[in-house]
Length: 332
Image 1: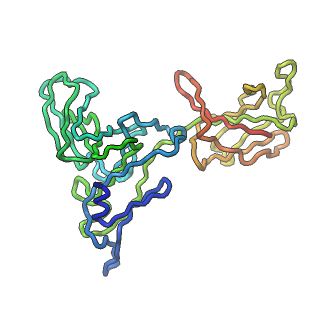
Image 2: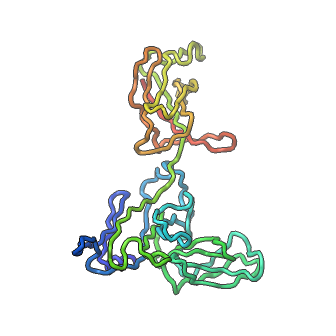
Image 3: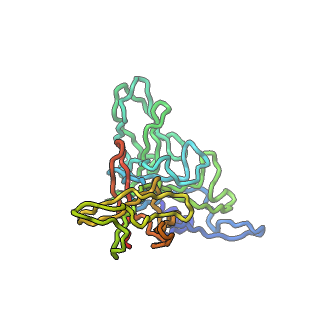
């Protein structure tokens, strides 16, 4: 259906990397106003399916993969918010049930508490498409969406939203990672992208996920035997733990990394350990710019130090809470 709508509206969908563009033909009228040409598209509800091609994404963000039968759902249209234009879920783990059958056997999280209850199913425009009574103790209900067809729906019991459904007539062998909905018409009748007079308002949408924050752990090893590490005598560490007073500093001084002690690797090598005092976000271009210096003569040994890598991640338990650690190996 979306491909047909694009064809009818003489629109095109082009992807490049993680970016995608919805292209429409335009022309300037006598007043210099950009208008859609020549097809007067004003109402559309488009759906796009996103695949996950980089498995390190689950390390790079706080996101857990959707459970089987589910997918993340992003939309510029929410029934309770007529001007929601950012494609950001209410939380990073918001998933919607992904189905390929219009007759849905829906399971409630809790049994229906009392007789006289009712279930309402609204479409993405806020229109009620199903309204049926529920009996006390009911744990499931059959929802027939054959008539309304493909789209996103909210399941409401006694005026409280209890779940969400995304229904499509396409049966994917490999379920998509995310479904993106772009709607032009709002529940109040206004248009976001293309007005009734075919005036174009370009918008830029971004699907956002929360980046993972980890403790950056620098492990410094001495390859040149220059005295950066303490001496080993009879398999014991003797002397000053940090002989050259090595330190790691941030150019902006916003982040603090401190020396925490000596670490012994599985192969027996010793390393100086430095850890960030606060958790830092994993980013392709991190704000932190660390360098390794010696306080003995204030010389700079390595500038800049490498940032944490999302592919190297380990965990530790602290007060019944999982702490994510990014080990970074440095050789001097």
